[in-house]
Amino acid sequence: MAESKSHKSSSYVMTPSNTAQEIARLGTASSYGDLQHQIWLKTLNGQLFTAPVDLKTKTTEGEAFDVLDVGCGSGSWAIDLALRCPHLRILGVDITPPILPDDPQTSNITFLKADVEQDWCFAANTKFRYIHGRMLQSGIHDWPALLQKCWEYLAPDGWVELIDVEHPFRCDAVPSEASAMPPFVRFGYAAEEAWKSNGLDYRATLKHEERFRALGFQSVSDRTVRWPLGSWEQAENEEGFAGDMILANFSKFIAAAGTAILGSGKAGEGYAPMSAEAARELVAEMTTDLEADWITWKYWLCMKVYIAQKPTE
Image (tube, rainbow, N blue to C red; front, side):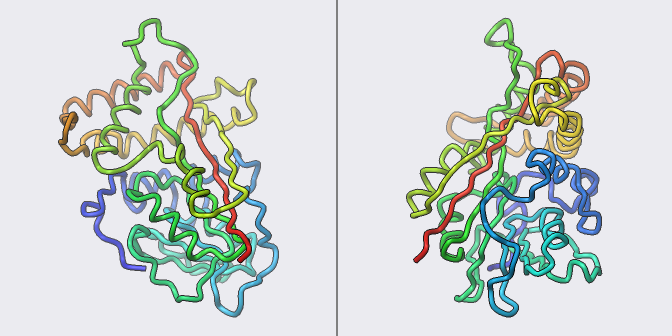
């Protein structure tokens, strides 16, 4: 796998996971307890994956890797899996990989600095039993190519699992006028347009099933999860108890990257990038709105969990 390009050349428009702001939100490899990871654990009832893959025993030979974590970010998911399954060998790949703590309990993990959109230069006989990818849409420009690589490096009967947000941003309270979209929803549309101008598709999850099946994957299924911003849904939905954590996580994300995302757009046909002043104003308006009116609008994010299995050859 080729070493990563810079964020600028790869059109990566999020805040890198090794900046001070993102370390505060996502944690470090030595803490393996970042807020976003904890939210996913609550969402999935403590599970690290939903695919019915048996990782209780090691079936690969020698030093071969069992699991690939694509876009591993802070490394929290990979480290959590390593602690639960010390018999597995886990490879985490990211353009800004974490620094693995000097801990014998995590000696079964390797973090690799690489761009997953470049060629995967693993040994020809490398076949992972499970490939995991979480929150990847900010860095993937060619989803068919990525899924093709997953197919090529997945062992027969192996599983791939992709977890991501699906736009647009939502609210359950309907505005009185169609033009009066609340700031949170307006930010979502503006961010999506900026990402789109950089070649990023924040509705890629809508195409996952079709793309999986076109490659030959079987047992393709998806699960939709509502992430409420705030505790307004606590009495209505099993994921509601994580609402305060989700609101805190999203607020930290916006503080770290909101203005940069809105200003990252590239001019093109029918699209003019937002000015720095307009970006700051919208972020400030949304920040105030989230603090004061999240319970009024009942904001939520649509999260999708996709799994697919490679057939037996």
